[in-house]
Image 1 (tube, rainbow, N blue to C red):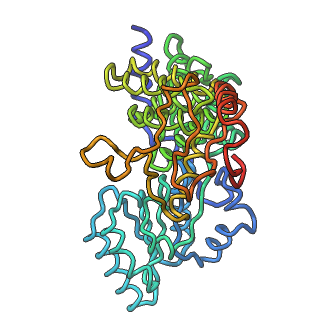
Image 2: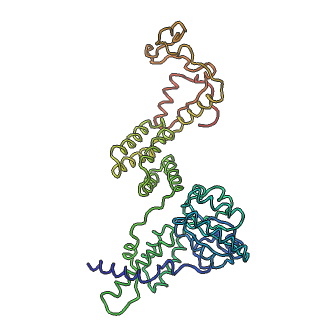
Length: 448
């Protein structure tokens, strides 16, 4: 009950003032934390802002890295009119109204216009196209802010007319500096363990860490002044920090989808089960489609494990079937088993390489006909055409194998599949050498 009272009182404190992240929003470039690669002395974006010579730009970076802050600073320093819009609720009509005002402003007093479009990736193609003529003729300078990869989400013509600046997640030192400023603004102190916990959980997001600190300070303040008369300077404890953090949703945009699945596949290919499980956990927590994960494991089982461990495909296929039969959350265990099996299995890409060589021959070499002895001889009249003549049935031979050509003459001797020395494929190599000896044909070009 006491904890509930403290939480309620903390909520009242938070509602009584502007958010800490807004109160600490920088008013000068030197106050911005992080992004020295763009805003340090002499760096390109800083020079353009200070000289008021900014052309259209796209600011791309994760949440809480300073995109909106930069836009507001530009609004303070520029001689141009500054028009802010959010793509979340703006329409083509809003864009056209901004364009009309910009044209009137330029004609009447020679003043340019900057349009800040937050969440630019939320605009669809037609909405972005409505911006293009005004940007192209220089009527407006566009500042687009996005958390998503602009190469996926911004129309190429608009992106090609803008300079792309990428903002990086804040590092530990930058987050600590933000926390110091936040504690000073709140008139509070914090245990070192609490600070380090907030830094560790910040994930490079300055706004998130300041919001968490504000909640933690409110909890500490209620504890300090609640049971005793008189106000004490609140001290944020580790427990306060943990309570304030709660659960933060994992950011997982379109580009993250491709990057994470790439890291996932490469980790398993690299025989790193821990990394494979980590990226699997990231995808599961972010709500990735489990069927997509399962499909990629089935592909990998043949592409990267192959005949080095033929069971890998069976395990991957079983995991995919479990996803359909059992569903999440229970099927996460089946996916995890497949990840560990495939990551710890011996690896071979010789099946993949062999198929690639065969397809190259089909594309690049003269196409040959099916040899007569291999043609279908089951229908009436086939024998009169010579179909099947000379074919030797392997099971009639005690060895279970007979030497005969199975390809067109133009392809005879071309070797595609070369077993490696890894896992089960070493046994395959031994068996095939025992059957074919050294007479398998030409050596393939390139390395497997």
